[in-house]
Image 1 (cartoon, rainbow, N blue to C red):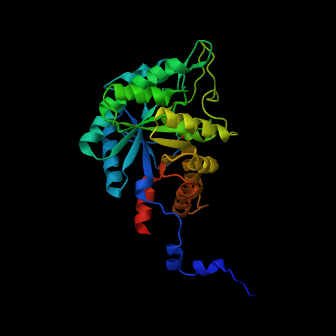
Image 2 (image 1 turned 90 degrees about the horizontal axis):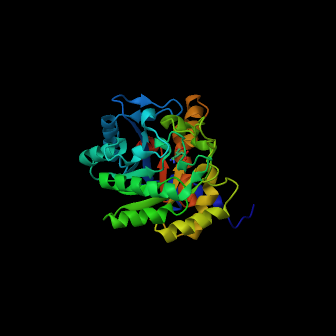
Image 3 (image 1 turned 60 degrees about the vertical axis):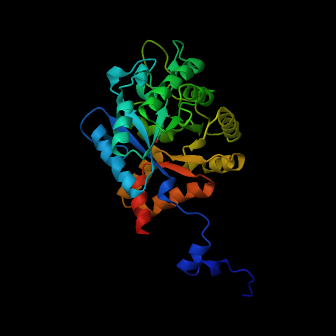
Length: 333
Ligand code: PBG
């Protein structure tokens, strides 16, 4: 054939492919989510093979290992004992609670590690919702935002570097920014869960923390989070959320889940100049693990390809339970 263009020319050798490669994964792209509980034991999470509910001291060694592999940011999630859960999630305000204690221990042992925290009431709520549920079964927006501001301050006082509101209440980013600034935490950043969809992919995470919405006899508890998390059918709405978060002072915006929402990452990349994070959530992780355990896929290749797809879509940062494995694999290549 007499072809002018032969795209295969640039695919001929590894060296040629490497000089025209558009995107690359780096270990500094990763944010590593970790679960912590009160017990002294390290408990594997059944639905997420390879992850654990760490004791505080076990978690500190895992954070050190992640740091040594080049990971520079972690995000903490607490499994709160049932007896401490209340309707207003007040345990999240305990300055000596699980998260503040964990933050202080990490800061002693691995002071340079960036610590991100999750702001939402669900791990602390007996109702299993991110906000306060009224007697009528409504998730109260403004009352919740006040509680979230207090929660963010407790985390900042303990030493959190990045506050991650994952609750999807209206106006929370601006309110948290103001609360932080008023208390002398102007240097603490906000990584907002900007476009967080009401997704079935969070199932394994809710098992890890025992935090799923739970029906109660005394009042009607909504069984899903559809009145605050976004409808998976919507894309333009993500732009609305991103504009609001920018105006309200978010430093980094996030799309969650990641894989089924690559179009949203691309859309926000074109819309915003802020750094964008993608959350490669628990259900995405568990599906890969399950298939790999059965020998149906090559885990390393699938994970690296998936993580790269977030970069290609326009993400700067990736929250992923694969962070340490991927860090090791990137060194191998
Ligand atoms: C809680 C929160 C959730 C996740 C992160 N923060 C669950 C939810 O909204 O129900 C999910 C993370 C994952 O699935 O990996 N606000």
